[in-house]
Image (cartoon, rainbow, N blue to C red; front, side):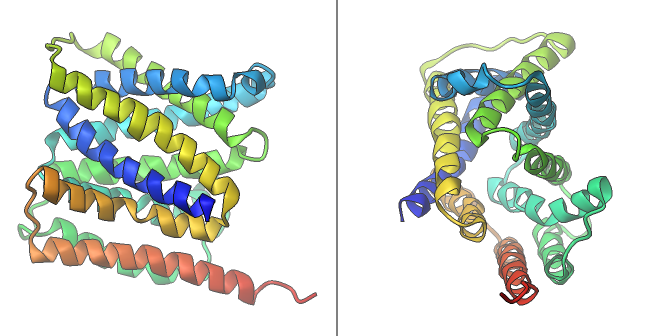
Length: 290
């Protein structure tokens, strides 16, 4: 139950991160925010894993760093979408589709064919996506395209991260990847734009919430939780994130959801639940008898 509690809290902190990020990008450029946030978050995690990180082979360091680049690009696209979006709830549900997109990415990159559960859940997720984004007829909000692109990039990160997980401890990998995300963000800012913003108490408050609570503590709890529960249980708990984001957006940002948006989000949630449950069912069904 301790692992379940860790993951439950991690999903709530991830949702807090959505709200905090929205509040921060009102006051400072999103690209700089991502760079500074994740660089600092990696340094906060370093005391928990520095002994094993310094012992890693150079190949493992490069692998984790390369995977971190995909995470960094995904987060840069995501924060751009957050800055544009008028509905964080929509964005959270669209981002949750990364779990559905990931099997297709694994098929393309590593010739691992998706299981039957994927093909059954995919039409349901597409229906939910259509309901969610087509609230204005066939006119799609630009932020929704960015959220979808970020979800696709995040699915690539999921697949690559799983591929290196056998050779490096999760906490070591997370620390390295967060560091690379921070460097990617700061390099992007240095090469593309002049940063001008004013520090104030509200900005500093939400920045610290997003960095310490929603990044360092969240990833630490998520890692500890994933060690203590089965993969299916972890996946089921992690899909709570868009639900918490929706509730916090309504409460803290006065976000108004149309019935069609709510139904679309619910259908996406159902598709994720269906995918996880069917994957587990077919895995048990095809398991050889002892």
